[in-house]
Image (cartoon, rainbow over all chains, first blue to last red):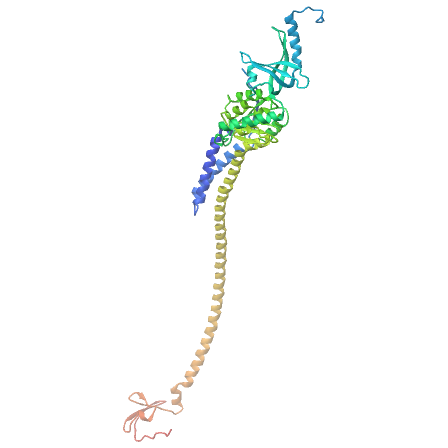
Length: 70
Length: 398
């Protein structure tokens, strides 16, 4: 259930944040090591949570009856 | 057990008895419409004639079923009707109660297909602007397909484990008979909150896929509240639902892969970010490690250099000391030589030999011109000084 907390909306926002972090690294000539470490920690958390959501979540399957014509 | 001829039945009872038996005689019959009229209730009464020998059967199709197929029965039309016989008690009339009617012959089907395609295209039902995108990371999926056959298992074995919530309705998908099932299935799913609806079946002929060219089915697909993915194989003519659907694919596997796509892309994206961000930071740390190593190497070199300097200093000192000793020795020797040389060259030694040193007013006389006749000179001899006057001067000829 915890895995499903990361709904598709959160997955979207995680990916967006990761794109921002990558862009930050791209923009630096000399990387500020402390700031870089902070962002890497954040990124690792996002990556880990997203991977959990994406990998090996069982599907649910249910057959339902069609409603008989009135 | 009493046989029917022993038991006495009323006419109604007998007709009921016959009708229960007649249900077993469900069939699909082909014939030419020789009569057709719509009753006041909307039910349609028609006759089908055997083209070969003129045999005729009376038929009825109820209003609700008649409306499904988009066929206006006309005399001369060749059709197929599916149903069972029934005796109408009030008049004892046997009629074939048709549930399904369809045009007979591929020619007729093709003609109807073209007609409907033209009509719906003109209405704008197939317009590209109407197509909707399936949202990223879809989860709630409705599936309409037949449980028989490999289609459902193909779909389920190809759909990724991304936490999909799949609801499925078992529906007929073959021939005209499938129309009612498909419509009921689509109507049922309208009440569910789905991200996408998937309708799939295997390939087939124009007759086989007939229901997917049915006007009501096509409109139901076009008007469905969320995007519809159609995966209905075909040989030549694309079923009209393909044009009405938001996404059209050729196989159940392709439909599953379509739903997986955004999830797979997200996974690739995450893996790329991981490589980029973490990899980049590792590079920074590597650089620091590099610097640390270089410092270590440099420090070791410095230590070595210091050590060398120490050794060199010691060597130099030793050399210097031994050199200095030699120097001293040399100096001593030189001093002795000098002493001897001085002693040998001491002018006072010459005095002992009888030489004298002449001087005038404290200045030593070295040459004849240094003195004049009549002047006084002092002669220093070994044990004193003699004062004398110059009487004569002889200059040596050079």
